[in-house]
Amino acid sequence: MERTLPPSEETLSRDGSGAAPVPFFTQAATFARLWPEIRAHCTRVLDRGKFSHGAGVAEFERALARWTGASHVVGVNSGTDALVLLLRAAGLRPGDEVVVPAYTFVATATSVVLAGGVPVFADIEERGYGIDPRSVDAVATPRTRMVMPVHLFDRLADIRGVHEVARRRGLTVVEDSAEAVGMRQDGTHAGLLGAGGVLSFFPAKTLGAIGDAGALLTDDDTVAETARALRHHGRSGRTLDHFPGISNPTVHSGYNSKMDDIQAAVLLAKLGRLDDDIARRAELSARYDERLRAVPGVLAVPGDVPPHPGGNRVSYVHLIEVEERDALASHLGARGIATEVYYPTPLHLQPCFAHLGHRPGDFPRAEAACAAALALPLHADLADADVDRVCDGIEDFFTGRRR
Image (cartoon, rainbow, N blue to C red; front, side):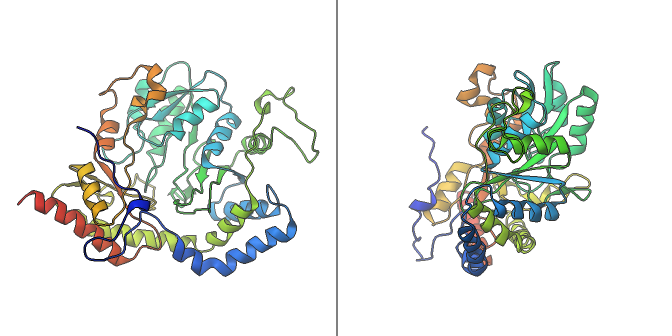
């Protein structure tokens, strides 16, 4: 049977009641509210005439370092580039293996390839979506140098369990914390629980730009210094023609991964209300949980899986697991409600990794999540009434099927 994908936001229309569509994400109201501050920051960028890797980026890096508690923040042009720079700055060598979860966005694994390494897949936990430390232990080999847990959706991975395996096997822990703005373990922000981590500022993220942008976080001086050189063609220092790749192979052949100052200006304006946005997302997520946890056909809601000890919950994506996922997505789409599938295919079964030789059934929990997980609209501008409308649609779908 041909699989039917849910409609994109561009194709949503008003449902039969005449109600406006419920997009998966929008920040129109946020920008209207913050526009005076955004305009002021952007005007300063225009007045300076430095649009990339300038004073605005440095100002945002300092502000984000204060908010996260990081010793170093290195602004770059995307979360994916931040991962590549982090892996290389943390010492990944060509051919080294990095253990990553089979259930995550493809950039987690492709960043390993781009950095010269080899991804090795592991399964995720029975409850939640973090990498399973037991699976990490099972798949690691003598060639494995690093493990990269991914903090997905609303909670940290089992970072204590990962570190226990890493210590025993001599692995470096680096974090794909792209989604983990505001997530902390025992008070320490995500990305600072190993050699380093990253943040993505893709527009839909908890702290989103108006295009692609990202940052590397670390408390390690050497990792930070290397990453700063790598983001700017391997350049070291203030001179325009000093590229120390021959004497320091780690930074040989750097990238053009600098952050734009306009993105930094927008992020700086939004950072000031980030705590309020996180609190609003928590309210909306709790409302979803309350409405949906007893609905027949809804297999799991986020609030029923507590964070690991010492961790907190920050709702970036509200992900439920349901029966008949694709049919439900189509049902909601017909009512003008946008959803997203995170993720349709586990990484070990993606064509780009076919050469690694995996088969269906190798990582059953990752495969089960790919078949059942559905992300619902969640953003700080979402109204309570919109949450209720989404929940009404889900209830109607499942109760109608059981009459």
